[in-house]
Amino acid sequence: MFGYIRYSKPDLTFREFYIYRTYYCGVCKWIKKNFGELPRVTLNYDIVFISILLSAIYLEEDKYSLERCAISGFKKKKLACNEYIDYATYVNIMLVYHKLLDNYLDDKSIQALFASKLLRKNYQKVVDKYTYKAEVLQDGLSRMQALEKNKLATLENMSNIFGEIFGELFVYKDDEHAEILRKLGYSIGRYVYILDSYEDLEDDIRKKRYNPLTSYDKDNISSIVEREIELLLSEIEIMAKDLKLRRLEGLVCNVLVLGLRNKANMVMKRRIE
Image (cartoon, rainbow, N blue to C red; front, side, top):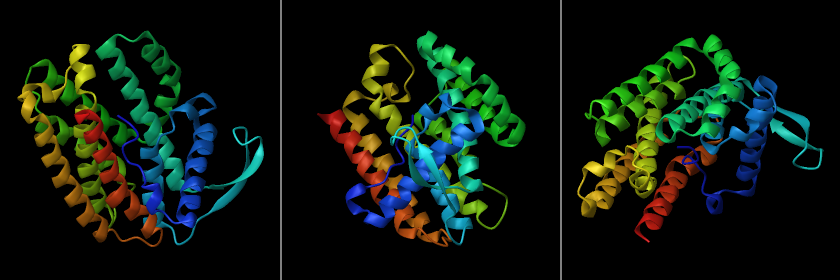
């Protein structure tokens, strides 16, 4: 359920792509700083975007540091560094930890259970620092599990709850930006949940895992998903214009307007083929 909030590279300027890379590498470095070397493998595009979005709203200019990177042959690289990147790393651990637990519940994956135990100490660090956020996430996932267990789960109510979770995680603090960030996160969360359900449908059926789309007529699933995704993309595009961005507008809008649509088109095309 990661990697859906991506940029459209052909539509980025060279400078925008360079800035994106400084954030990507910055998040990677801050994961190491906050949680150690191993959790860096959990880095994903969704978390990078949250760091960019919040930085674009709250910062007048980027802050950078020069750090050596083992992946780049220990050459010094320019990395973005700020409190919003720091926050994004905590959100990352929150989501990854619960994703691993979910994988264990679904598949009885020993690897997922082992990985979750490795992250347990880091997750507790997240809970200690962002207690309310962690409670919202845990409560939302518990509600989703209860709906599934009682056979009351639908695409609508499950994606709504997941949207509520994302809505809270997109909000950095309770200020004039909170409302639009919560609404944007809600719509993106629903987009991620629905698209992920669609992409995993055949695999879930084969492995006898829960998927809300199995309750629909097989011939109508693609059109239902396409309609829902199109409505969400339209909502997100409108909200992108309402964001009070201080900078990085081209990069943020590239992801929200073009990147999300491109990713949806790729998933839809791949499933149809």
